Image 1 (spheres, rainbow, N blue to C red):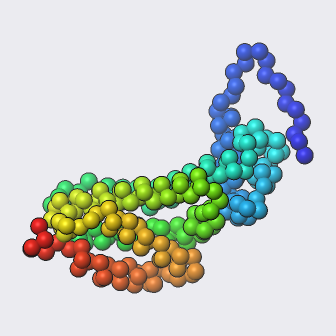
Image 2: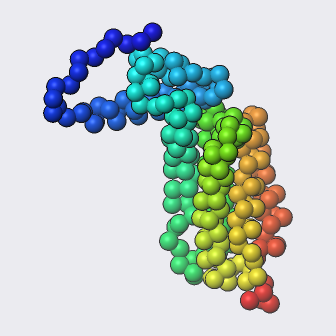
Image 3: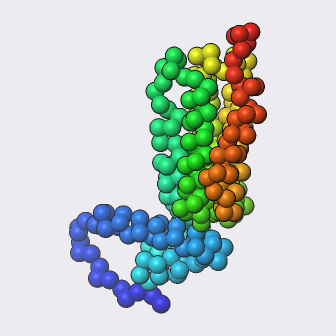
Length: 223
């Protein structure tokens, strides 16, 4: 059903940009709820409009298609995740003397915990990012992979400071270790989605660090 035509703006009357931006934001947030509830494949523009309580013609004033709003929905979801996961976690302003292997381990464990807490509180969001949205098209895949690159680069900088401080081995390939640590955050998130709790998550983190720490720690002959 189309909406009744609205009165045309008078000549020279400025567009209410604040109202337009508010409506656009409402549609993005509605699309986020619809996509994470119904799934992207089965959702329609009409579903999104109905979630806001407007006719689907309003949707097409702001977005050309369901795919067009998806990029904004992904940004919206990623902003929520990055704010909760990263924040100041890997940019703590530590000096070289303050960095220890224990602080590095603590930062990684904290990142895992934060991701798992999101998986517990918003499982639909995490499932969408891990499963539903991959494979929609090459552009979206590239964006999701780009997110991995951003997180990996943040980790890499953190690890490089630890190498400079003599905490980690001088010959450590920090770029590859960063990607490895990033990949190791995924299993506990998937297990959280399957219903496992904090005890299982803690055991996983302890096992990972018990395996990795001997290979990461600087030795008297490594520098």
